[in-house]
Image 1 (cartoon, one colour):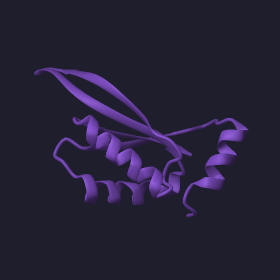
Image 2 (cartoon, one colour):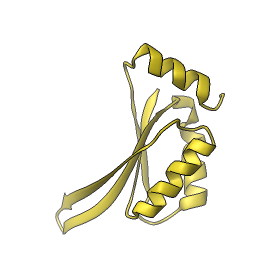
Image 3 (cartoon, helix red, strand yellow):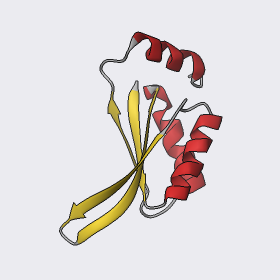
Length: 99
């Protein structure tokens, strides 16, 4: 399992992406946060959408999201999940798209 983060600047787009991910069975739920990034040029407001999914789905999700919701600011990356509760892990295995 992995956690995929999708970073972009528009809250309405984050909701559209979340709905698409759930409809395609890439995610069973998605979290949306508003964040501030600090860098050498100042502050940037961003929206972070994140969810737990199967690692083998990453390339498919990456391609689909870039095709349907592309923007210059779109950033997608994943981090591994080393431990997960038994019940949540089973639910993910049963409900997410088969690979």
